[in-house]
Image (cartoon, rainbow, N blue to C red; front, side, top):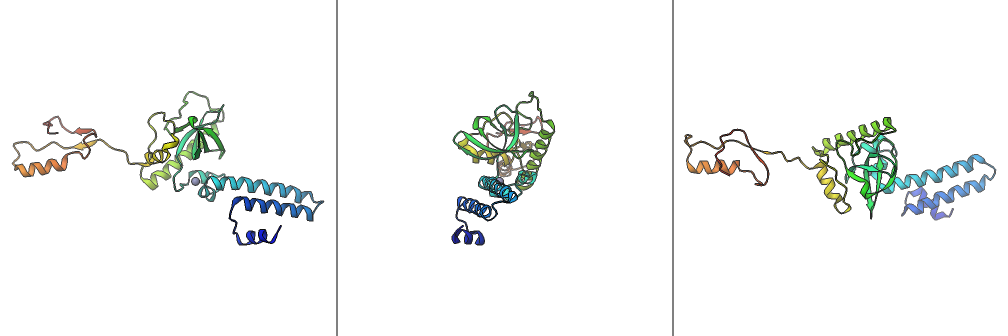
Length: 241
Ligand SMILES: [Zn+2]
């Protein structure tokens, strides 16, 4: 290992993941050279290189998830900024499974499945925005216990979203993710639900209200967006709108 590598390791000043990986590799080679007959050193060196490669992969996916605890339930239920879209992901040959969308490149989505913390590349066509019921409701789930854990963790993730943003919206139907609209998908997941506008009955003619007051009353009562549904509490609506 050269002095530059050692200094970088000591100062934690690597400028790239590859530099760090290269130093670890070099470090293990040095250890093996110093202890050529040690099986333990050889075994530990292989393990270290593998662990570093795996951790770097997760850090590249999302450093915040990694900080929350690599391959743990905590990393799955904690929220990152920006938020990961909650989806049903499907690996070929398996059922739809709750997952967090990490990234999309071309027609491939990178996801981490709840319950098993498995990182996988799946087709964009096999990623659906999260619905309350699973999309393949009739399909048999073989690993049922693990699936229950995954559902539970996905619900914890939803609770955390509700706590932070006030809302969580399930997709009401089957919606495939659109790589061009990932931000929109995330926004829809947490945007306030539009409740039907509740209007009260306009004042009747018998009510002694002058015309200016009536106008003000209705200005106040009219829905902001006329396209939104209006629901009246009584049958005495007089067709003002
Ligand atoms: Zn994350």
